[in-house]
View (cartoon, helix red, strand yellow):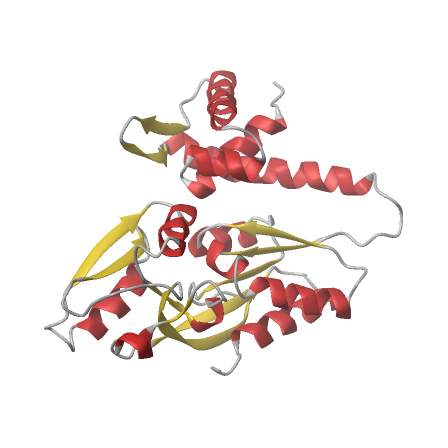
Length: 286
């Protein structure tokens, strides 16, 4: 039985983003094409992989979650096959996994410095949730993971406590007499806990919580100035800044950010990239 890699790529994109429109943007196609790819893949496998429906959040079925691991492996094998046919002497890419938040903020400057230090070593980047990335590390789909700490692991080589900050766009407007709009991902329980614990010290301050299924949707709301959130300080950027002092919001705690490396990764370039990632997340607050 043969499977179309385009269909598998669309399925993985839907699994990562939990959104057909975001998956279409990620794969460079249109939403109707992604839907068709998923439908054809389900027909080919004779299994329902994705739960979807009008007004219902996108989620994977039990069969979908089981196939996701195999789908990622198939895409990795396809990439490796393409690499094998490339020009001899070119180093194989270092496969880095991180969250969408870090990919859009802390990662670019670290990669820019790495490119100067090791110009002959390409890097590919995969974005997913922190807990999914550790699974990708374990099954050989990525070489390095930069994530919120996922607990003890033989591959965890760096853990840095980083402060959390109240974050929004520079133009964010909020009057203390009104509820503070806060937006989080559905599964960002730890970040919500930090926010609510801090706000408990100011019972007179009201809040309005909203939840989002995928990081792309959350980021759209934040960039529109419709809500604030909390992020690790290394995830700040020109578009998302620390608004705590301006609005006299309570002090937040810190979270551990970790770097995990796959077993048997002894390339010098991998060590260099790890050093640049550590340097980026361990910056002193400005």
